[in-house]
Length: 195
Image (cartoon, rainbow, N blue to C red; front, side):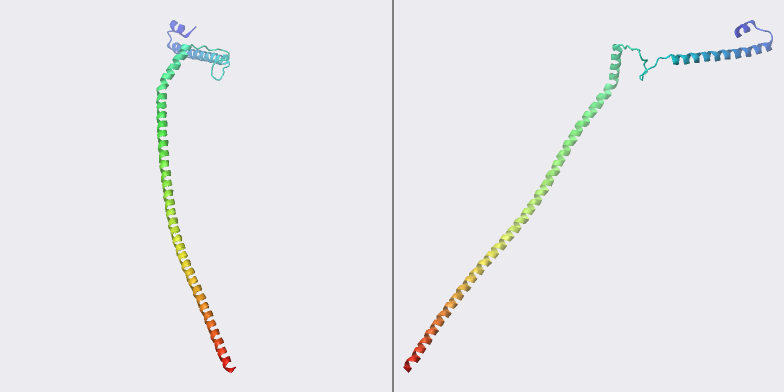
């Protein structure tokens, strides 16, 4: 007999009624426990009854057929959802690349300007060195001209001295000849009167 049937029959004794209520509560809680145990056993059994699955979570041995229209709709939805941001990213990347190209061109132009400035400075330095060397060359040329003039003067002086020396020697030779002639004439005069 269930608790509801006992209630329907009813008793006039209030103590019996309270005892009956307690019995009913105990009986209901034991039924709930029994039902929970059964459901747990069924769940445990159902877990063990599953077929082994692969890494994707699909049961092995079963082929799932998917409607191509659904795949197409899902793909279109995915594309519609992500394409605007991808297009925006693409345009941003394109803009960055064009800016990068402009920046690289500008840097190359600046490098060329710096190279020209360096070349200009090197050219100026070379011109200054050439000017200094030209001045040194002119100075050496002047020195050589002065030395040549001095050498020519020394040669002329040496020639004059040589000519003068020769003239003096010639005069001395003439003088000696005259003196010899005088001596001979004197000796000839002295020798004549005695004879």
